[in-house]
Length: 143
Image (cartoon, rainbow, N blue to C red; front, side, top):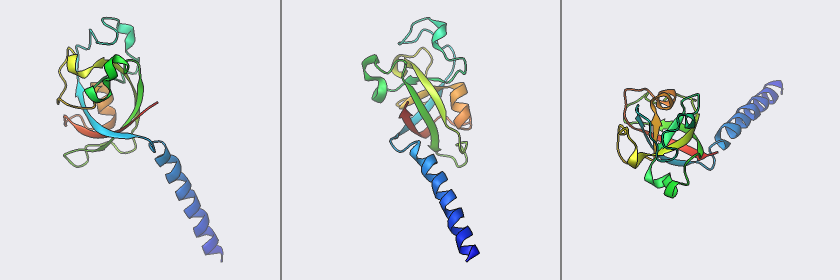
């Protein structure tokens, strides 16, 4: 009887953890992410204002799918890598929060791959994926 009770308690803990973890992205969208590097200025959102960048350097340019005629400026997203062309590219368990500061289509710095949903700063990209790749599949959710 004790083993069954212990099993049920363990199962409850595991299921609770899974529900909490999965609910973080229960309303997330799936897209792609590329990366870009300096120069980041000027941006379509805030021009030459260097204070637009978070001190963490976790920022991005919006692809056309989320640009929304400039309304994306300042929006924040939770982003995590879910897959890539090469195995073990994603860093497991890593989720970042980024701020949109630019439009990918008109960015001064060219993205590592065109047509991405979100183009992450080098710092942001390296936090969720190995930097050797230019393109990853992501799950993202507006905060």
